[in-house]
Image 1 (spheres, rainbow, N blue to C red):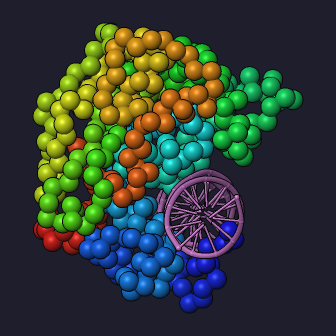
Image 2 (spheres, rainbow, N blue to C red):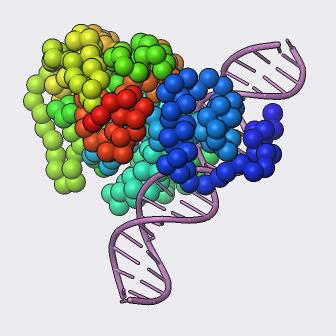
Length: 335
DNA sequence: AACTAATCCAACCGCTTTTGG
DNA sequence: GCCAAAAGCGGTTGGATTAGT
C-alpha cells in the first residue's frame, strides 16, 4: 500500500487552485471525462497530483454542486443521519443532493456540534450530555469519532431500538415533512461528457420528503397520516438544461413524523431513495446499525457513484454565479 | 485604524478499501 | 491468492475572512 505515489513527486503545485487551473481541469473533464485520475493532471496540463484534481472536481468543480448556506432542513437531516451513520460523511453526503462530504464534515465540526452542545446534546452519542456523563466510566464519547464503523452500532443501537424517542434526543422537535428539501436518490445514467454537452441530463430520481427543521423553541405538529403526494410536474429547466424526473419517483410526503413507524421511516425515500415504499409496511425495529445498514445497503447511493451524478435539484437556484459561469464555459452556453 | 481571536472552509495527509494484472 | 496502483474516505491543518476590542 503505502502513500499515494503523487506524494513523492516534486514540483507539483499545492494549495489553493487558481481560476486558470480550475478551467483547465473543468474543460478536460467536460470533454474527456476523468478516466484514471492519475493521468488527469498530465492530460489537462496541470502541475497537480491526480488526487488533488479528483478532490477539486468532487468538492468544487462538479456542476451539480449546490453550494451556498445549508438550510435548516439540511442541517436537521445531517443530524438525523449522523445519529445513525456516525462520521460516515460520504454516506451522509450521498443523501444530501449537491453537498459534498467535506462540506458536511466542515459544517458538522464548525457549527452543528456547537449547536447540539448548546442544547445539551452530546454530538457524538446524540444523547443528553447528562446521560453521557453518567455513562462515562463505561463508554467513551470519543469512540464514535475514532471508529464509527465499530462503535457507531453501540451508540446508535440506542436510537434504533427506540424509534419513538428518536427525535427527542436531538434536542430538536419532531420532524414533519412539509418543507422543500429534495433528496436525489438515483441516477440512472453514468456521467459522461457525451451526456453533458448539449444534451439533457438524465435526471436523478428526486424526492421531496423534507423535514421542516424544528426551529429553536418551537414545536411542530402536523396533522395527517402517511399520505404521499405525487408530484406531476417534474420537468424543470436549469441554466439551459432540461431535467425531467419520472413522476412516479417524486413524492412529497405529508407525514407527521411522530406517527411514522420506524420501519416506514426507513422505507421512505428519506432513506432508501427511489420510490415510496408501502404505506403498510411491517413495523420492524432494527437491532443494530449493521442490520440497519444492511437494510439500506440496496439503496442506490447517487453521490457515491461519482460519475453518475446529475446536476442539482429544482432548488439549485442558489448555485453561485461563478459556477454558472463555469457551466456556461463548459457547455458553451450563455447564462 | 490596528490588532487579536474566532470562525470558516479548501486542501492536504495518511489510512483503508477496491480494483486489476 | 498476492501485490501494487488507484480510489475513497475521514481527520487535520493552515490560510483567509470576519467579528470583537
